[in-house]
Length: 431
Image (cartoon, rainbow, N blue to C red; front, side, top):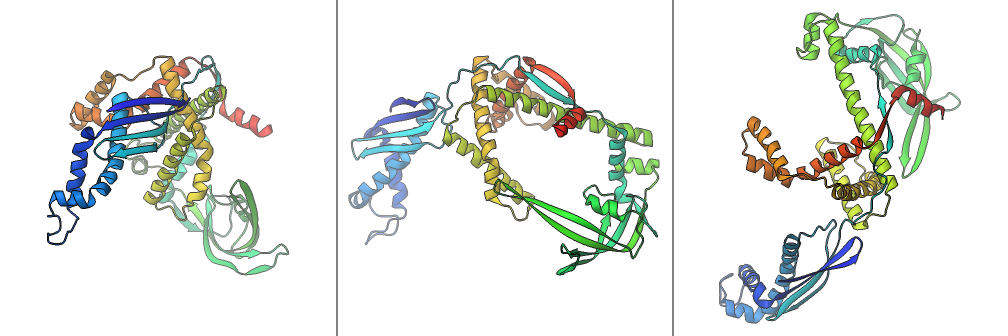
């Protein structure tokens, strides 16, 4: 097999392959055997016709059909043999098959371009820090014990630890009821953070039989345009119940923490630590996003369009799979595809920069690292090291480890400035 690799552009190559008829003869003969199974010729049972007769009657059609399959297979053989790295769907641009003589073809594909990276060291980047407040811990406690709440009928709404049953009637701008827009016996938990703020505020001090008004604003996108629509309602309270919190006994604390705490003090410490761990993770993710965003910004370029399209398809397909797995109603594939367009382009840029940066700084994932990882995992699951290493390679674990190494390198070589997350948010709102 004669292979020639042509560099068509910075991010595009073409493989030119020439094969003699003798080189592809085994595949040609195999195709004859496969086709024979479905061929019927008068005087012979299906699949039993003499090969010589099949070749005489259908030989040219069978061989031309086989040549396309062979070309596709030989292309991937050439990829492996020459360690080529296509990053988009290859396109066959030319195929020349001459029965009994030769098979030649050309395949064009995109590759990751070689970039001259700059200014990726010494970047000043902000890392938000979060302080866990007691009210956050108390909210989490309320959330955990909520299934254990009891309800006591009350005369008046005194705070948000109440729930009401109400009849809701949509009204027009003049305050008149709209026909067909009434819902009765709606249970509203005022302690639920997702409940409309106006309902919480306007229900305060109200008794059974009282009414109050509130407005619900629906915001949704049509393409890139944000649409807002107001819905005005009047609510008639038919029942009021006070939420009675259970006492934080040892039994209750153990139940809601699955035996990880047994006293109110231990519960508070346990939950505070969980929230702190969550904030630490969020802080690192924000730092990473800020840093990578700056690296891409300083080394911006136009990524190969086929690669961007490939990344985009994977993102949309993943969302489709998640929607199916979690039974998401009314999945809008078109809206999801539109949403992921800029993200796919950014991700394509970062993956190309990542590979170039790893090459520039000689950052690698060695076989020995995969073996060490496999040894540790093999001790707990009983799978052999060799099988685990193969699994890692089949599931792109080396690429993931390489990205982790590159990100660590960038962090180690950046100037990280810690900022108070609350103050930063306040500053953004003011601006």
